[in-house]
Amino acid sequence: MKQGRNSICSCGSGKKFKRCHGQFKRNEVLNPYPRPLPPEIISQIKERYSKQFMHKEKYGDVKEIISVEFNGQRVVATGNKLSYSPEWKVFPDFLNHFFPNELGSEWGRRQLILQDDDQNPVIHWRSSMIQSQINSRRNKDGLIGSCDGGANAWTRLAYDLYLIRQNSELKKKILSRLRDNVSFQGARFEVAVAAMMLASGYELTFSSESGPGKHPEFFAKNKMNGITLAVEAKSKHRNGVMGFSGSPKEVTSDFSGIRKLLMDALNKDTKEPLLVFIELNLPFPLVVSDEANKIAKELKLMWNAVQEKEWLNGFPAIGVFFYNDCSPWYLNKELPEGKSPIWGLSFKAANSRHIFESESLLVRIGQGCLQRSNIPMEFPGQS
Image 1 (spheres, rainbow, N blue to C red):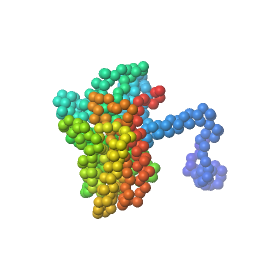
Image 2 (image 1 turned 30 degrees about the vertical axis):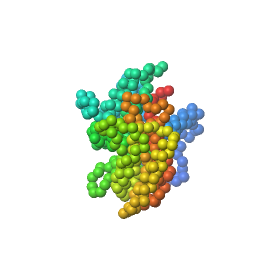
Image 3 (image 1 turned 135 degrees about the vertical axis):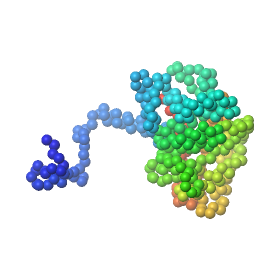
Image 4 (image 1 turned 180 degrees about the horizontal axis):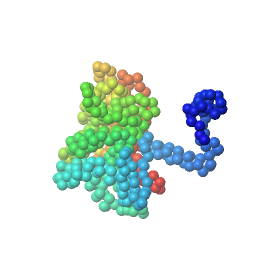
């Protein structure tokens, strides 16, 4: 018979069992499995750790996809929601359900009856993806891939929203801003930055924008060292792209307006160390060239110039990340072969008022940007 911890110890000492033979010794190590683990269990544990490591290396510090097959259905858990369908053969199939469902089916139906110029950019991206799939051949497994810019823009935004829903909290306000043509581009970039920070190992708290003062897009807390950053994101508007009227212009290295976006972000002047993200919205992919070197030089000079300005409380930022994704420029067109549509440049602050080593942080966020762009093609267990 098991002895209660508050009963008198059976040894006759007169003490309670928990104070006598029932107490744990300070240095005692409890081993629920006293014998050596069988080799097959050790092998399975090693395999599991190996898969976790490979997942983190490829996709960043985000949760793995939670999915099983059951009774002919593919079941996927996202946050506190369960979705299922027999039609989802690969993970992007699920994203093509998840994204419209988050935006709302009724909103989607209303969009489809509007004139093209009045439709939200995501409707154009989805149409571009569907058309590219129609024009593409299936592979040996019966699956269709696409190098269409609109398809890439659609899938990337869908995956970014999935990462937020799975690893943080997807606010209704973000979805509302995505539905609105005017606020769409800014909201889309905020979602992209949130996904980058999640992949880089941060926990997010979105600003309520209540109370006095200027508020950043969100706060990001490093899961390793506990340091909290204020994050601000700004995106450059250009004609004919992402819902803005006019025809897309031939742009080379047009930085008009970028300095203003940078100053607007820096004027948030937050108590926490400020990290700024600026989307350039240029139409070309990553290419090592004289033009790319010119861009890097001009952005560096711009960053140095804003730091030299007289700041009342000292320079508020610890660094800046200039980001570009040319996919929206290639609507109904294939992206340049063999070139990454996503690229970025980061610069640390030379004279921030915050005592902070930002160089390694910016390197890690650069890695997170690339890891977040690795959209899974398969569900766990598929090969």
